[in-house]
Image (tube, rainbow, N blue to C red):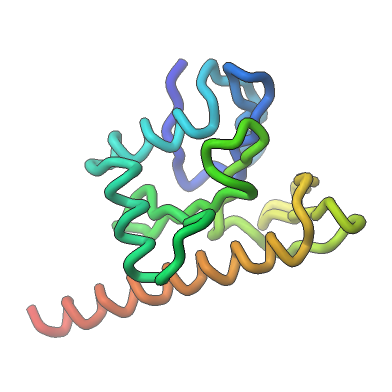
Length: 153
């Protein structure tokens, strides 16, 4: 089964070296692709490449590391990595589905989604906070550009 990130996606978490655990609204299931492969496939599905999306986000944010990705731009479907995207322990979290987040301890963060589902990721609170800030900035810039473009048409 192939998987494309969609509005129901909460998070994509590595399960083994070759598969991922997908968290959606009320479902949780395993897909025989790594989180990074799912990201690449999802970007292609929505008409771009992962590298193209990453390069655009880099230009907008002026950042180089752990770049959030706009998987689908009509609805600003933005996800961010919890570590380096190619790392075997990297999970991807959907920005638009986050309700809140809190430190569990020095190395783990609890993410609470808008449907009250929770996920603990092995990433420090400050790192998740930085990732969310970057993703929000990316979202803001893209929405602003779309509004300016709409007004000029």
